[in-house]
Length: 216
Image (cartoon, rainbow, N blue to C red; front, top):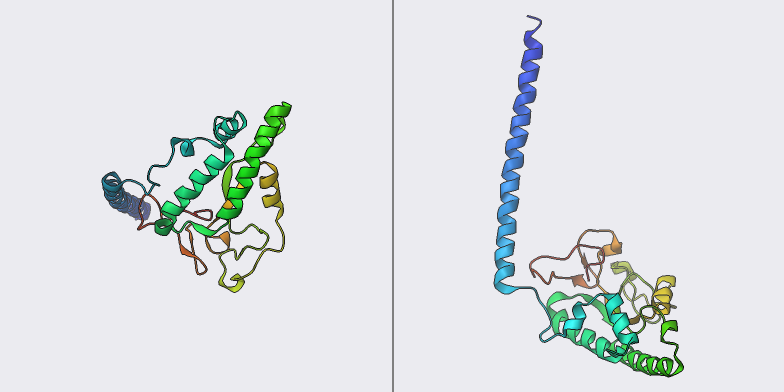
């Protein structure tokens, strides 16, 4: 009688393992079918992209910075292309929390002038590493006069009194801020949704939201 109980226990463990494997297999099949449906939609529609966007918008930050420093591209050219891409896609994606396009354009013109002055003086290498590049910040970073709610309804309407340390360092590196991207509530979640700006949509599937918290 003694050996029977261990044998029953082993059988029970084996059955539970078999059930777990079967359940895992069913979940894997469901996941595979979902991925296949997503890929079918993606192949038929493609991602949301700006029409006629210049190829240099796909370059890395380092390559763009080098092109601006060597005067292959102008900062104003790159910033304008980035702004046009945002204007063309943001209605569908809701990626931006706020924008400062006018200021960014003026700063890019100033960057062009500074590049020319540095070229004449032979000091191009002294320019900041990412000089003249456009960037979209995270809404949670404080920026003078701009809302930084951190996606919290209780903080809606809160305006920055200064530029936070992260913003200052980004601008010291040469970047030009064109706006801020949407975030998850309190930057705490894995999706990009909050009650201040709403949900950002994935450019690959508008029925989905990009991961958080920097989804915008």
